[in-house]
Image 1 (spheres, rainbow, N blue to C red):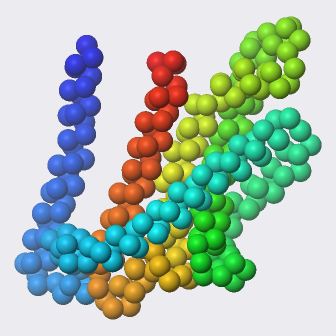
Image 2: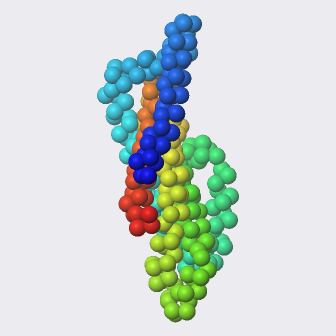
Image 3: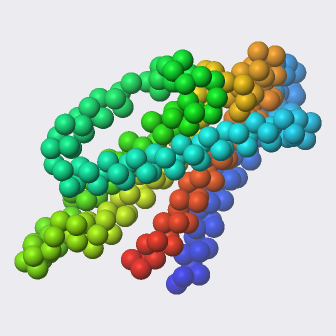
Length: 254
């Protein structure tokens, strides 16, 4: 039975892979057949070639962006957990700040980055803060939702045992909210690299965002596509890491 499930998963994963390969082939044929200039639409072969011809520059910019994304993501987790715990232990804190946080999420990310650059300069800090601001809310809202939507019978059981609020949190609310928490982490992990790149795009001297801006200005769209591909792959790796950690932490539920 388990082998059949594995085979089904492999078959299902082949469909998007084959479709993607067909799209790449059509793309290559269209560019070559219609002699589309590279500054308008580079071919997949041109894009792959960038990884060989400009490997060193791409590597240096990628490392910087990934460092910013990782630092910001870790900071967003810490802030979200602290705020979620405070909202659970201090109800007035949630009433005061939760609606404000909801409103702040309607502010376009692209309008925040220039302000951070003006306030904190063109270094690493504004990029890390940008990632943190982008990532922390999905983690927070899922964490809080996980603690609030517990089976009432579990809560009543802890009340009949005269469990303190701290013990209830440690032994019930936090463990039971882990599934929701990881859902928030997966969502936020898709934003981390993108947020760092956007911040670099709007102001900076290093990183994939800066690399994209310089390539765009030089009409080197093959480099723009190559750096975009790195952002996509990096985001998928972030999601994969979170998924692996989730399986390890929640294996007792399987």
